[in-house]
Image (cartoon, rainbow, N blue to C red):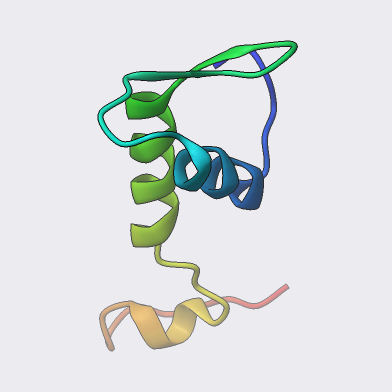
Length: 65
């Protein structure tokens, strides 16, 4: 994707696109809605780990820096 968009911007574009469209055109860019939907899905299923010690096998030693 040639532009850097925030996830909120992607959602706004997808939500604002007419039903059944494959692309959505603005004054400056043509967006592939399937690419945006895929990026949103990837974002939504990402597991953000703030404390890795709670997400690994118990015998694994965690060295904090």
